[in-house]
Image (cartoon, rainbow, N blue to C red; front, side):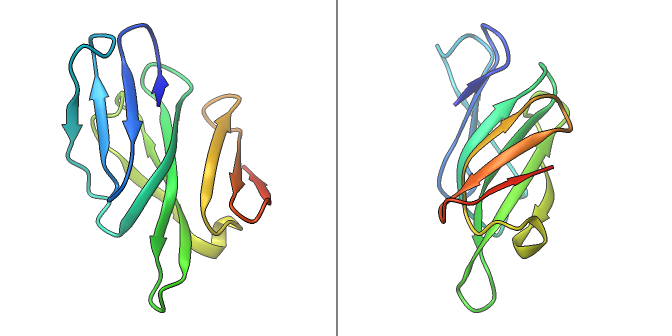
Length: 116
């Protein structure tokens, strides 16, 4: 779960689910995403009120786990896949952190750390 400010917050989960609040958590709305292949989102972080990142994994063609990273530039209303699998150097992301909108790190289940 990540809050961009006192009101705007997002949480992620299984099947690529993303929920969003604009009233500090009093009510939550499910965000319809196009993250069709994403099995789980494990972490979400916002660096500004508009720009955020979510990471998790999806299944590859032979059942292997491939890390997936997604970005929003509109406060979490829509999400776009920014990378999948071995091109990211990660298998399954467990935690992400960003210094700013472009510089970030991802910790994955094998204990490796990848960075942008």
